[in-house]
Amino acid sequence: MANILDAKFIKEYCATAANMYRLGWDERNGGNISYLLTEKEVKEYLDTDKVERIIPLGFDAKELVGKYFLVSGTGKYFKNFVGDPENNIGIIRIAKNGTDAELLWGYKDGGKFTSELPAHLMSHIARLKADPLNRVVMHTHPTNLLAMTYVHELDTVKFTHTLWQMNTECIVVFPDGVEVLPWMLCGTNEIGEATAAKIGACRTVIWSMHGIYCGGHDLDETFGLVETIEKAAQIYMMTAPIGLKNIITDDQLKLLAGRFNLTYRDGIIK
Ligand code: 13P
Ligand code: ZN
Image (cartoon, rainbow, N blue to C red; front, top):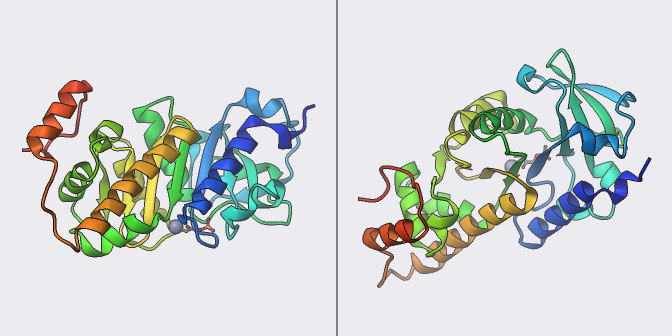
């Protein structure tokens, strides 16, 4: 059996986490990533009959029974994933009862999956219903986006409109806009349910004064979505205090939508 440390999904996952850390999005243990793996992918590296540990989920994920996820460990630092994957990340399978996780690899030091697993798994359920190709849910704390949630109205329509105006490519990358949740207690089933209720129709949910949740087909694409939103927030934070002399107008956003043949979110542009 091939060495799992050579698996493309492990290498890509750790490289993505390193990039997120390098950009300052994931201070200390901030952020978490879950990546849906196929059984075929896992079987290349692991004996899937060999369960290392059973870890209770704390909620019912029956819609995901039998599915495999690569998930970051709680309290683990993104900067350390590359050098020591086995202690920092793990591969779980959702057990038949829907309420336990079967640990197949990782969390070697006795650790467990992220405290945000409810939000991740509930988001996967919602995303898969909307888009069967969704494999990644990414949570991170991008600096400028967080700053923006302190100074901008926490309104989904207004927040999306502002972000679309901050960089010509924004409406092309996230035509579905962003959903904004008020501050909520993290690590709970409640914030998971609130996130999942939004993330089906819209791939991005902003947790005010905390961070962002994004769904995507693969790690690169999901990273790119966060990166684009964070850059728009950076431009907002750079320009708002000075005062804007120029802006991308609604008519220009419509031109972009026409040029790229976009189905964009209703109610944002007048
Ligand atoms: P974990 O260390 O449990 O993944 O939590 C980090 C975080 O970002 C909480 O929202
Ligand atoms: Zn967080």
